[in-house]
Image (cartoon, rainbow, N blue to C red; front, side, top):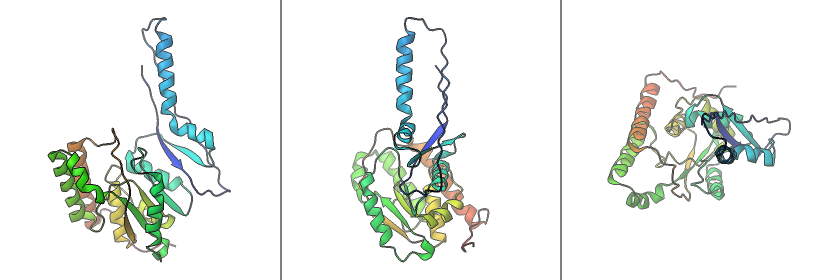
Amino acid sequence: MTILQRSSLLSCLHTMRKTERATWMPCMYALVIEQISHKSMPLMMDEALDYLEKRQVAMKYCKKYGSDKVRVLTLVKNRGKGGAVKMGVFSSRGEKILMADADGATKFADIEKVEEGLRNLQPWPDQMAIACGSRAHLEQDSITQRSYFRTLLMYGFHFLVWFLCVKEIRDTQCGFKLLTREAASRTFSALHIERWAFDVELLYIAQLLKIPIAEVAVNWTEIDGSKLVPFWSWLQMGRDLLFIRLRYLTGAWRLETSKSN
């Protein structure tokens, strides 16, 4: 059995403009059955269809609440986490934009904490500000649950982030971030990294643009199945950090520091 599915991104919209209409596209599947007896086919078909129905979680919410509240954005090609989030940001509406991981490691109620962090940064220069959820206060507890190897990788990555890119934020990788619309527009417009290290480039760009950033402690729960493969993922992220610094320093990636009209 072969299942073909386009990548989907769920964009939940809190504030809408009545003049804009949202559309959604269904996920596409191809189910190929070969050399299977007629007796076992019903069992296989029931299992397959039940599974595929469960996979279409985002589409169910879209149908339940309507495309004016929930939209499913379809990516024809896998563009990585950063590319998917970038597409979601540019397709979103509202004065503020919240990024959140799908695994629910951070409770949605913690939006009140990042909202307060954003308010504490006022007045916002050019209406730009970012509040980052942070797990830094839980670091010591997490160390006791990790292997020495994973702890070494974590400290190595944090050092590279601090040394090469972002000085003031201890936890750049927490997916719970709240941005004003202007801050999201300016930072994501300049974003190049589409893999896991995109958060670092996002905050590096914010630093260069002198956008105020608050780091706010949030609740966080380890979710099974949400971890990266340790060595190769961290190695790739380390390479991306080096690319971020070198390419901005050499002018290969340029940043418009003045607001365009």
